[in-house]
Every structure is written in C-alpha cells, then in structure tokens.
Image (cartoon, rainbow, N blue to C red; front, side, top):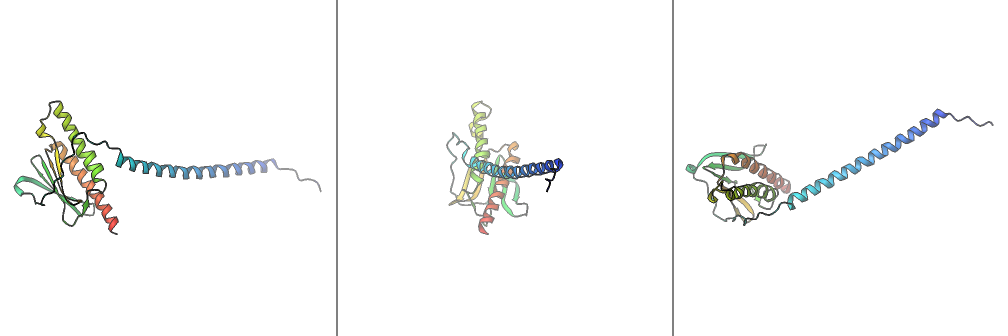
Length: 195
C-alpha cells in the first residue's frame, strides 16, 4: 500500500498545539511559584514587623500599676468614644490640656502582648514621638518637661488605661487614629481566639 503523503499544515498545527500546551504549563507553574513567593514575602513582612524595630535609647517608660480611676470631668474638655466599624466600644478617649487619657471598658480584655500594641502603638508611634521630642530638646526647640510621656496602667497583662502627657495639638489626630486602629486589631484577634 502506498505511503500517505504527510500534510505539512497538519505537522505545523501539531507543533503549535504542543508549544501552546508547554506555554500553558509554564504559566501555571509560574503562577504557583508567584503565589508561594507572595506568601513568603508576607511571612517575612510579619517577622520584620515584630523584630526589626530598634529599641529606644531612652529608658523605657515606667508602666504603672494603679487603681483604675475615671478621669475627673473638669480636667478633660472632650470625650471621644473609640469604636469598631460595627459600633462596638473599644475605649473612651478623654482629651484635656496637653493630656490624652484612654480608658478601656471593663468587659474588654486587651492583653499587652497582643499585636499590634507593642510593635505598632508603643514602638512605632509613641516611642518615635518621644525620639522626635528628644531631638527637639537637644536642638533647644523644646524643654525637657514638654517631652511626650506615657503610662500604661494594667491589671496583670490586661491594658486598662493609657495616659499620654504633653500631647501637642498636631499629634492628637494621629494618636487618636493609631490608638483606635490598634485596639480594633486587638479586638479582632481576641474575637477570633474566643470563637
């Protein structure tokens, strides 16, 4: 029987289909590798967030254990409830003359070790503000008794109050949003753990 002539177009189509299949496999493998790399990057970011902040050169602020008190109304001009998007009260923020007093309701148990309290609120916000104030003191722009200071009042590891002194008007908004964001993230973590 005579041999069938090979159709050159059919051979080309076969090669093109094979090449297409290889490219699709390569794209799928590359997508999978990209997902793994993104996951690794997120893990590295999380590790950096907890480990990369340099410790302040100043001695750490004293954490006071005190009896919980409600702030006297006459000392504070404004009371701002800090709430979640679902209207859950996280804390009441009392604003007075250069003072910010955050009181957490008794039903909230925010552990001082729950992220992002130390890594973000303390080290990236409050300590950075203290460092800027120290620089201003060194440059003669601020007196030492005008430097920002803070106290964390707690029961064991549960944060009950946060008192920040020498708060300039320019810092009120940043502090308010940083505190609210921190407490909301801590609340979300606590809600997940109790489920």
